[in-house]
Amino acid sequence: MQALFENPFFLIIIALVCLSLFYLFDGGSSKKRRLTVADWAKRQALVASTKKGIQQLRKKSLSKVCLWIGDYKLPDKKNRWLQRLQLLKLQLGWKPLTFLIPSCNPLIEVMGKSGSGKTYSVINPLVMSAIEQGHPILLYEAKADSQGKGGQMDFLITYAKKHGYEVNILAPGRPYSCTINPLDFMKDYQDATMAKIIGDTLHANLGGKNDKKDGFFGPAGARLVRACLQFAKAQQQEHGVADLAMAFAVLSLSDLPKRLLEAKKQSKFPFWSQVPFEQLMSVADAAPTSGGILGGAMDLLESLLEPNLLKSYVGQTNTPLMLGKKTDVGYANRY
Image 1 (cartoon, one colour):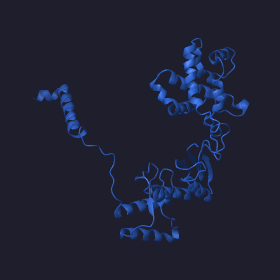
Image 2 (cartoon, rainbow, N blue to C red):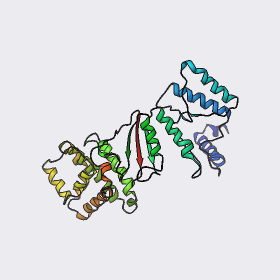
Image 3 (spheres, rainbow, N blue to C red):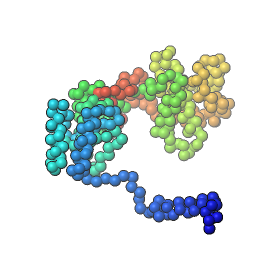
Image 4 (cartoon, rainbow, N blue to C red):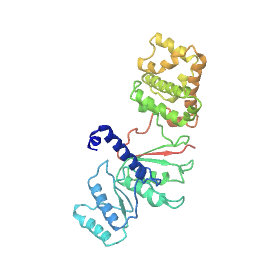
């Protein structure tokens, strides 16, 4: 028996059996595994969250943000007794007039049936408290009408302006929309990483469903879009701006693969904007293949080139790409 326990293969078998039993009786349970637990906020929880929230408000940090529901002003050093009085009232069972919500950075999920007042009672007060503290705001509006009314935006944007915010609204197709040119996120034409991110985003949102039909032309078209973005960016110094319309104009050129080959021979365009076109140039003599790649790329960009939408992402960006203190950017549905 002792010889068996000295045998490493026997010990491995025993370990595998124990692991199998663990998964059978625990990991293999038919009960759903809980990702987290929740409970009603009782007195102890309210006291603990209030203490933590006050601490985070006193020592402000980008990684630990405290918001609130209600009307709250942090007492100064001379009036800290008000803070202690607030905690004492909570410990004695008084219902708070203001709820401090600490550590809001990861996620806040507001649950309730449609029309139950989630936005009015929780979401708007939390955003208002963020505005009062001067945090940068990104607001997505799905309910507003063509004039920006009927949702959160008309109220919260006005509230932000009242508190000295720089406000911009991206609403494709609406006259009050600002302009955000995706190519302005690229440092220069050599920024292949950002070009790939922009191209992949366009592909995922505008042409991802085509991948099920063809596993070659879809990704090849997305790669060609990235190449055109880099090429358009390379023309910025000469033309003053680079945008999606310029990239589409490049795609629309007749005999584009042969033009690229000729430009390569004559060294007419920079090396790093030439590299992404190599796949298309390699099939320049195979018209069906090159045509399929060009068609896939044009499908991605063509849906964006609607006259009513162009103003929102073609031309010079007129809103900050990096949000700082007291900066608010609202995103609304298209017309």
